[in-house]
Length: 376
Image (cartoon, rainbow, N blue to C red; front, side, top):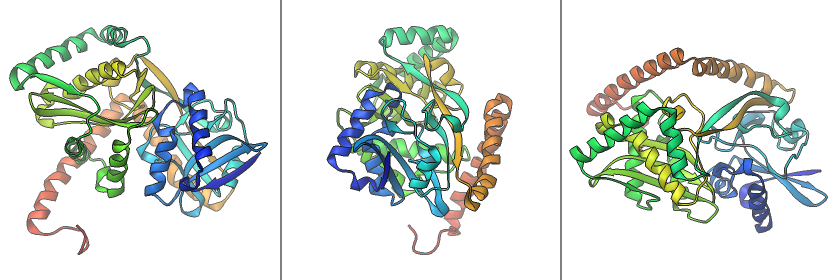
């Protein structure tokens, strides 16, 4: 067994083709974040992206994309941006995980959205959790009947609100796979506003993340594409989503809506339309990602399993990393596992967001920005 580490741009055409073959051969790898196209795009934008190419008797049997940061600290590709990571390999590939880290020049790596049960990483899984999906393999009609059965009251309420939105704001229509950059800008503006209002870090304040989304949006192939969807009332956009698809699955990434229309629950309305159009496009699943959103419980019709864990080689850097990460991760798990604590934490973050959004406009009016001179 031989492991060679390269930058994504160093992958040859034969290796790119082999990556696609391995991914298509295993249903557990049917996620766009595991696609070679996503790795190549990340590699164009971030210098710290690497790929471990694993060979056995001169045959490539696996790829491990990752990020290599200072002091030998590794992160899954895309870090906090992505909701699936792991080995893209032949089925049941098992190698020594610590030897893999050594070859990758890593002291430690932790993960929280690993494809569960991969033999190489399974001994290091500390927790395995379900991630809700919309299972469209039997068609949209079968899916929507499951949603109705999950919560008849919620389903009836959403349909009522959709009719109400149409009467009061204009006919409801849905656009699948919009290629319009202006539509994308609208969605990202909503998402940035949501991050600020809810006390989260605005990911789109980082230009490279905006560029990542734009490059994925521009990519339209049979095996990988960015899918931008938008729900309209008349000619006014009210809710949208940008995700990534393979030939058979769509992974959720950035959903958002205009808060002016919050009373109509446009986000949930949008998801139902998205499921219908995904089924028409031949997709079998929509991965909504694990998380504490109650709406996912009744929109789901199946689950995928994702794992959390940590792999480390004995080193000072790994010890420091443990002190900085593991207690925080455990505290986060405790909060997300307890609905009352989750709601309390959410309220605190939203209160912080309200304070932040009220202070920032005042700072701009008085010219008291904290940005260094010359920053735009």
